Picture 1: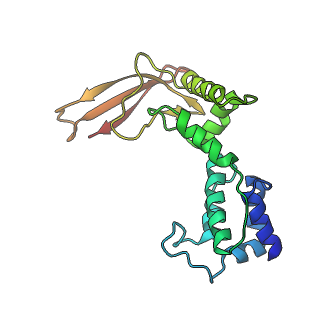
Picture 2: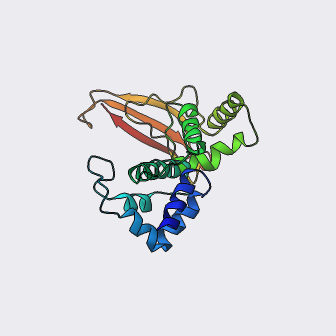
Picture 3: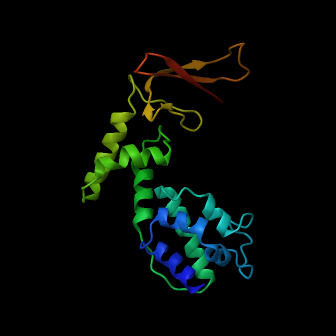
Length: 203
């Protein structure tokens, strides 16, 4: 049991990677037993329904966001067990970086961002330069004709085969007999074949 506790502590401290934790969750019954400790009260927390083990098992621990979420839960678990630890800040810093640099009209999946956006900042040390490189990469991939989309709901920029489509523009739907609500149609162009795809959003 102590070995399992030490393993969780090492993950929080950045000494164990997300993929290592993911593999161990599926292979180590001792870790499952530890995380299923009935003596700990999870009422009122975000894992009250599933429990900590199932919550962790459902995360994608190959991503920054998955690791950040896992780290937060394991910190809470270790605190409940009255075990002291230091916290590796890398996951929080990179997650914050994504939130700070992604334009408001884009809501790309974090897996996409980690694969195609963040590498633009590799090797850079100065935070301002890192942000500038990431913002530049967003602008390079998410291109538009004249203006970026002004979404009336959550952003829905179309990405096909890991490539954002070119945003052509939007036009208003108002008092149209085909629709019961007003809204906008957003037009995107697949630059590979010229096909136009659309997204509709209503008030």
